[in-house]
Amino acid sequence: MHEQREEPIAQQAYDLIAEAYAARIDTKPHNAYYERPATLSLLPDVRGKHVLDAGCGPGWYAEWLVNRGAVVVALDANATMVRLAQERLGGRAQVRHANLAQPLDFLADSSFDLVLSTLVLDYIKDWRRAFGEFHRVLRKGGHLVFSIEHPQATYDAHRARSNYFEVEAVTALWQGFGVEVQMPSYRRPWAEVINPLISAGFVLERILEPLPTEEFRAQAPETYEVLSRQPGFLCVRAVKG
Image 1: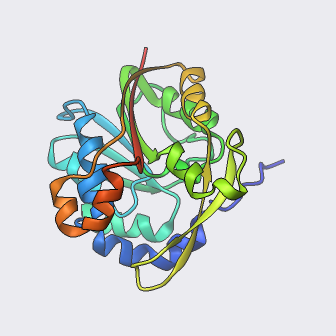
Image 2: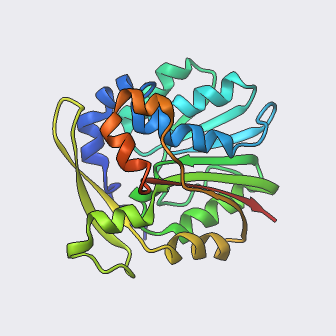
């Protein structure tokens, strides 16, 4: 009997905004001037390394990696994002349609030096499976670098209807992509960020709670003031021992 595979939680929402999201990805403040500088600061030298871009979206990170000499396999669960990433990469990376909530059977054990997963794990409920697969495909000493919405920020946004200690499905209104979208994701407590990582066999190396950059201030001064006082994203680096 085949395992029933559910559609990714945010599939329909990203179907609506994928093109507009890709058009803005280079300069969108929360990405370009907030999450991205912090995540890039956690990456090792990637020249000559085999990198899995797990949840590549329209391909910004995959292109950055390829431009610095990495051999990249990029995955995304949204077919439009896969097409947009393929167009951006122009054949310089392998871009595949894959759901990170499911086993990555097509990837060999110990075949990557780095797994990078940026702002995608919030759409996955079971991190134990996902981290287990990341651990499996990494070589010994390989790194996992990922970014997510900060657990405190997601709890604060949904406090009135949430149980902090649960992994819960929530929605947030996204604007600015030509259409208003209710974007679904999962919020979780700190324990469900760190313990699945440890259970999978990773050693935690560094955590960043980034501050917005001066470029962010120039683009979105009001949001800059908010993010200078309270967290929005969390960036993590761990290693396979």
